[in-house]
Image (cartoon, rainbow, N blue to C red; front, side):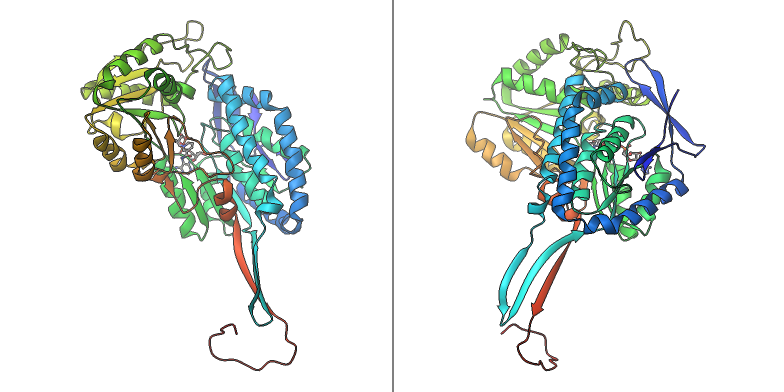
Length: 496
Ligand code: NAD
């Protein structure tokens, strides 16, 4: 059995804790590794290592930090296939999708390579007579990241390359469900020439997270995961004096206007609802149909779902893989049962699907509900599985009101051919990321990623300039060089 531990001070470390958790291949149901869950002492050791590495790394010129990033970028590009395979074997997503995840993560490293330019401050000459003023962005210190199971490469890459490029040191705590690809990132970063201790990975559960949240030497926490844990992380981190960005769950709606092009909308919804088995925070889980487009849309979705190829993620024919764990599969199946009990029409029922050769794999087929209403659990809660709910409304205002009154506000989309409706929607919708005929509007690395309402707690979105702001402290210096001796001044200084 493969035994997985941590990556601390530039090397793989076998965990010494007695507590372990099992890692499975979701396509077969077989346990593939045993993961050591870090104890308080082990996390404290990683924090000490990151604290020791901080002064030298923070003082390293940004151009030299950027050069390490460029080597890391090269290594990542050389290992896309390997990383994608590691993701697929533990998460279950199909290989092409896993490659897409790695690519989206690599784009953040490309952005971080521009750190000398990104850290440039502002300078004002002569804010007063012989007085100059300038601002600089300095590292916040030891930072920590806690990531979810559904993007074990991309989400960590949203966090640590920017933090480290800014001169911080970092401790990453990946999901215990699929830790191997994140550990591999640490090896590649070390190979790129990153000094020991600047980037560390500790595997673990609540015990590890709580140690990071409460330790006085950790200055900033970047979290992505479910809403209850995001709320807890933000509250606890703030209580212990840290800056926190905590991204939570989602229930992303797409409005389908009566004039939407059916074929392209159906293709977009198929990918957005069933891609990665719906285990994406930007998945579309609710389609709000306006007027009489519902019938042709549902008929077309039904046809497409018949042909959806649900296979192991490593099968090149696969369009959708298994869910991540048996426990998660059971939760999703219970949601589908509850939708039926509450009176929604289950137009396509994927509950019985099994893989003929992998009876123990965590497979289910895509499910499609019609006539879903806002009082149902399948409408209100995040399912995080391959389940699309169709809600029928009469007009655009009702559709917009549904989105704006929902608890979550991560991403959303509108499908229409009318510019005015799209413009109105982008302006009035209460969500952090908006697509116009784009089902999954994940911003590029040089923009920033984040939701509103219960989808994000804290002030900063991820990566882009928001990431630079989150991982740096602003300092403004005001300097006067006298030509003659000064006198004491007791009133509020004003510049003359
Ligand atoms: P999760 O909240 O269960 O776990 C996330 C991380 O928190 C993991 O590292 C886990 O070990 C840790 N954790 C779990 N329970 C904890 C506890 N009680 N105390 C401290 N730490 C704890 O989330 P998940 O199931 O791994 O991921 C799926 C969720 O993540 C979904 O809700 C999804 O919407 C969300 N997500 C959000 C975004 C976004 O950008 N908003 C992106 C990806 C995933």
